[in-house]
Amino acid sequence: MKLMKVSSHMTGAIIRILKSVFLGTLILTTVSVMAFRHKGVPRTVLVFSTLILIIGLAGPRLCYRFFKNRQILPNTKEKKRVLVVGAGQGGDLLIRDLSYNQEYHAVALVDDDPHKLGREIQGIKVYGAISELGRIIELLDIEIVMFAIPSAGRDTMKLVVDHCLDAGVECRTLPTIDEKPDGLVNVEALRPLTLEDLLGREAIALDQEAIFEYLHQKIVLVTGAGGSIGSELCRQIAKLSPAQLILFDNGKFNLYSIDNEMRQEFPDLNIVTVLGDVKNQCRVDWVFRKFHPYAVFHAAAYKHVPMVELNPAEGVQNNIIGTKIVANAAEEYKTDRFVLVSTDKAVNPSNVMGVTKRAAELYCQNFASHSSTRFITTRFGNVLGSAGSVVPLFQQQIKKGGPVTVTHRDISRYFMTIPEAVSLILQAGAMGEGGEIFVLDM
Image (cartoon, rainbow, N blue to C red; front, side, top):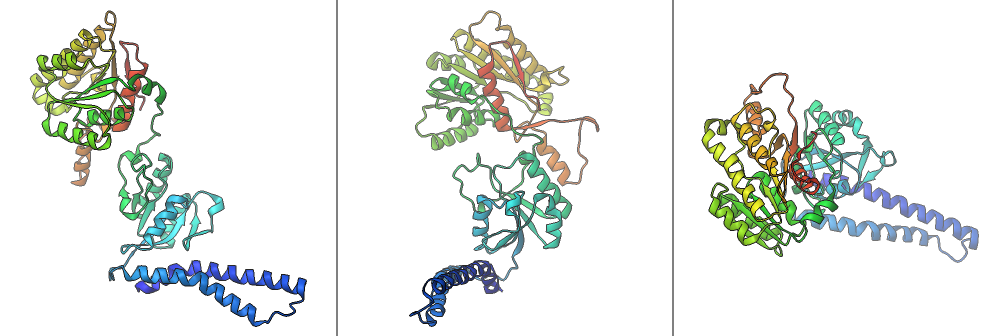
């Protein structure tokens, strides 16, 4: 069974070689007859030259495939029939890798480029456009769809997912260019679709030049650096080559994790790791007195609504008093700008967490009229993958068969990814003059 599949995969390449050789022989024969009347040239030359060309072109490919397959252990398990979405470079590289895979067998391609329709890549035919995906899945008995367009938009991704859901087949995707900048494409790189992939809009565009200008070669402090938002802040700020990046957090393991990651990813960056609590005024004062940060991103907060509801005193201490201590230090040591990471729950707050964040906002806004430091606030809604996100709860409830607990059956929730949330924070720091509250339109 395995040898039959390998030879069938080579069929397309061999057929193309035969076509090319016979066409070349026909052209040479025609030219020879017209120019020289074929005098002095034995007819056997045409036969032998054709055979030599076929052996020379097809032989090395067959030998390579034979020895390559000898290295692969036999597998009695039937391979899954795969349809690859995308007949570009990503699809080409993926099909090459699939040809040596024990588990999958590529049988078809789809692509929206009309010029690619009917063409073959590594012997695999492009059967139609993405809009015809459902019909092709049923026609060819496809078991899994692999999405091989790393730069595709959300609309294209959602269309593929809708067809896969209707057909009841699994869908996997290659990482995006941002996730895998090395550009390597293989089966192992494929991953299941995530909520971030299906975000209902395109990612926000930023003024990268303005962000670079105010953070490049500056001393930057991130509080709550070990959290989901804080750690992504560190990653994005590190790419802008600050003079010094100060990681401040009271969670030992989280702080160790982001410190270790930063030192591996950015070995030349000047990183200072400070274990401390924003509620500890002496510790915060020491950090500002020693390093004099140019920009502060205050992401340290208790943001899990039910937990803060159960422990309101700690919520007040951390979210209000902690913000007050850090903001006072920023004002005292003439920090250029202070960016508070807040939440949409601070709008007409109906829970303790929202109240504490609204109080923190008001305290920072109070500085706007008399401080040389620019105090800026950013708000956003549910962040996919963040520590306080409701999405993991929804996923668990759906996995158990429900019910999904929401405030009201007609409620609308808006989501963004962690990188988007952090991009908003950085953009706000570039745009803000002091006293503003920036909100992402989700």
